[in-house]
Image (cartoon, rainbow, N blue to C red; front, side, top):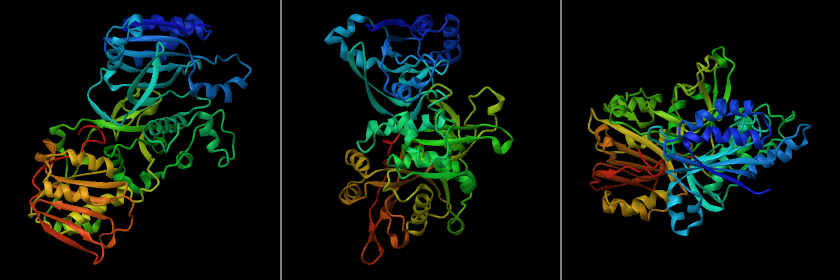
Length: 508
């Protein structure tokens, strides 16, 4: 069997795919039409009008083939084992360009990703990676990685986040979320490997008392266990424990560029929904959002007392009312919704009143200082250190996790930092991961500037005697810990204003 390749524009994609689905997946024209209109239409209508497509069949998709051999091939029905692949390009393309070395580089610059269509009717959308550049949607910031593939036998690379719909038999929303997390991390770090559906199922074999296929979904504990089995130091946050601070902490991890799994439910409000999605980014920050940011009452009694005594207020970047970027296997990738309405894009009343009741963070296993304690530590260091913060000051605090390697790379190239302060930080030994608190004001943050900095060791959960502190500075002072005498060493130095760190999400 030879590979069939078709080139088409956006107005032609419906007819072409209906023909492919009907002919290659052995379903009637009526069913193929229904599949496109019910499952594919809302994906393709998000593409920019200039998008062109390359459709290829047969395509061997490793994720579907794993499900096929571990499950579908054992069923009595005749299930196809090959898939259709649709690739996306910006602007018109011709077959001849893929055989012209001079034009391949230009094609690479215009390549926007791919979508696999598997023969699991009607849940047809398989492994996909789509560049945000392909979509009509507004600007947003998201974690992404580079994925390699081929189109018409030529190698291409796309930057995006992996996505798939559930097939409802080997993959539910929970397994799909775990799969996407592993695809992302495996593409970025050699410590991790992709997790095919059978591998996810086998990871839970000794922990489950029941059969796992057909899938009935995974609960939060099972998802956390699976991620731990795949090499993460998973941290689970629940609304029961963290209540009003849950979404604040979720925002902190998103600001840190860590994709996480959010468990949604409305059962506590009389509904029947339990669902898992990924939170991978957020919308750009506007000046109006910074102006509208409210001063939230500090929940920690000790910190609240210090703030009151010194007449200082802190506004938290993670309290800004933004839209966040979700990957939901019931919808096209990159859905925007506020954290208090994570299912706003659903039209069915069944999905009303869904809330984030848990979220799971796939942390590097040697990150022992989690976000809640890290933020408390940074606020404590800011308020208890003898900085010259005048009474009546309002501080804007932005906290995030990053690797010391990435932070130092940014710092080495950042000319806005005071040179002596910058060199001191660059010469200071650090753990692999650090928590960073940037201290600013509303007006400075609108210009993406800060005037204070606190860096904390993310591998040190003990906060007494400045064990976790690496360096802190604000205005005309900076401090670092004397590890022998367990006290702060004070230095007088005007730090000035410097550009904030934006490498996690590639923007603010």
